[in-house]
Image (cartoon, rainbow, N blue to C red; front, side, top):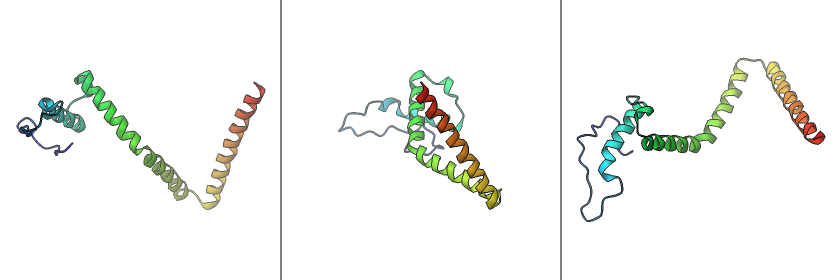
Length: 118
């Protein structure tokens, strides 16, 4: 969005060049942007929107989430690593990591042999 959330969208004039045709959706742009900012601020609930607007919101959310997923995963891993080290001694950290590795390899072996027996 190109405007700030505190803008009064109802009074903002629609500035379109008269030499070019108006973009698709230009007549509803101000109202749409106003409602989207209301959703962001929590002033409007998604169930109060039309199905098309709710779909737009979901697509935008999913696209934004997917674009940041790698960073989210990296930061969660870093958070877990730092938490583990902050609240455990080096010996405890080594023991916890070994226990996690043992559990992982036990599950992988069970899954492998389950597939071989089938």
